[in-house]
Length: 264
Image (cartoon, rainbow, N blue to C red; front, top):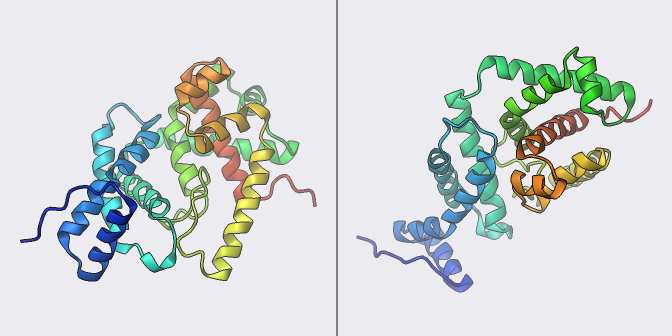
């Protein structure tokens, strides 16, 4: 029976566990790595839990994410030279998203409204060649502003999923729009070039958002603030920040799919 290894506290101890696990597949070393990196799961689950329906328990998200962490530990290549945390966060996100999709926690009506709003947003931005206000979008959809904002709040969780899927929805470890974590395969010159071009396109898309929307995206994905904390900065409610975040994500998704602001 393998010895129990306590959670390491130094980089040297962690590296020792990595080399031991990769060389001998020692389950005790594997367990030590899982214990050490488990806070990553709680962090990701906490970020992704914002805006999800109340019936989705935080403990369930953590449970789903643990499978992603284990998968990341098993598949991580020490020789690539990438930081494990960067690789693991995307694997954890992917595992949580896979389980949420399997549970089909979002009603079809909500998904339909999300598609309608995103389609309308793309049409309006394509015509105006700029970000649009809630009032303009509501008018375009023949809705009141209050109704539009209620719908944005309802589909806010879909906005989070869309952001994580923006670069490549078919690959669990694809870099996300929010944090643009490096692709572990970026040592391939072609992949590295494509990722660099994606970064440039994303930066351009974010810069074209209006000031308030750009601030929400920056504070949430780059500064790590919660929606409540962003609300305090902007002087609005957490629910309003959630609405702004959702519309901003939809706009970014449209811009990354099609260069709608470029004139022919």
